[in-house]
Image 1: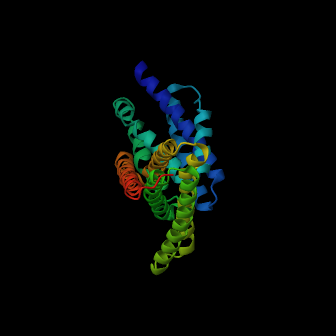
Image 2 (image 1 turned 30 degrees about the horizontal axis):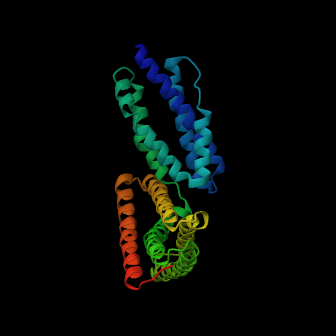
Image 3 (image 1 turned 90 degrees about the vertical axis):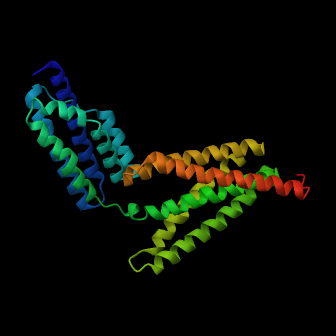
Length: 288
């Protein structure tokens, strides 16, 4: 075996050992028995792959324990599907290595098929309740970003006082949270396929209110209204970045397209509202 091929096999062996430990740890923290069994199966398969590579290297695999810890923490925060899809995304980068190995090692083809087909099928069987309501979370977050960034931009120039802007933003945010949650409840209740409309309303309301809190925080911290607005928009961009990345991984959708769409809509509304606030202040001769 060529030295280059052996180096690739060693990396693959260590990666399989790492993934084996990750899936085993995730299986222990899974709340549903079905999810735990699927993850144990995935861990078992990774162990078999690791053993195949070990026959060629003749050495014991070294799992990356930091990577194991990191994925377990991410699993607790963002859920099993997010972590599994994230790991699968990393495995996609190994396709070129598999193609190189198949020229010399016959087992490489069957292992690659397992990685690209069998594990993906198992991952699709993972069930998480919160993912059933991801559309409700998207609704709440999107509406809060578009509506509140626009409102705060308008309030900032029209009122020019952080306490007034914060109070107006808080009242607007709470009222909009209750309105959005109620609308989602009525919408899901009218849908005969939805079994838990109240949960959908809660997910929508919580996503909305968390977004409201982050957007209002700069108006508490900073004295200058324009500086507060700048950091408010920065917070909005961070929220869009984080949530769009989460959704793109879970749904296996384009991150760039989703991020560009959300940030364009939110900031366009904020810009228009800022101009409306400036016009209202000028035309009404308001000086605060």
